[in-house]
Image (cartoon, rainbow, N blue to C red; front, side, top):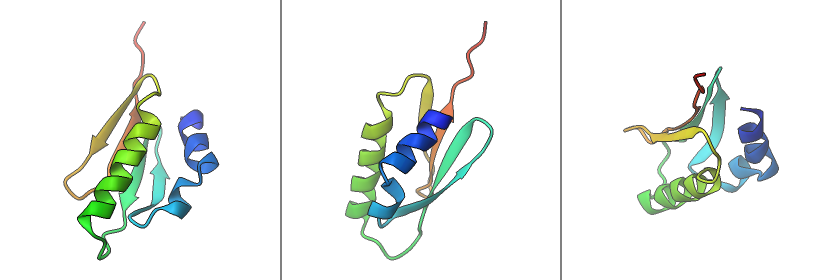
Length: 80
């Protein structure tokens, strides 16, 4: 999870976006919150795609988008 948080902080992702400005860390996932403001769906979609492109090269994660627009990046736990 440290590398995912460092990507978020190093890229200063949350300061550049209108729609996705905050996140919450959990044990094996990060929830990136949709601001739920009056923001065009085109801007939200663009930001969502950019976030996906940033994290798609990371190994062992799942990227989920919920109906309310929140994004969950979940670290897969490897089984032996």
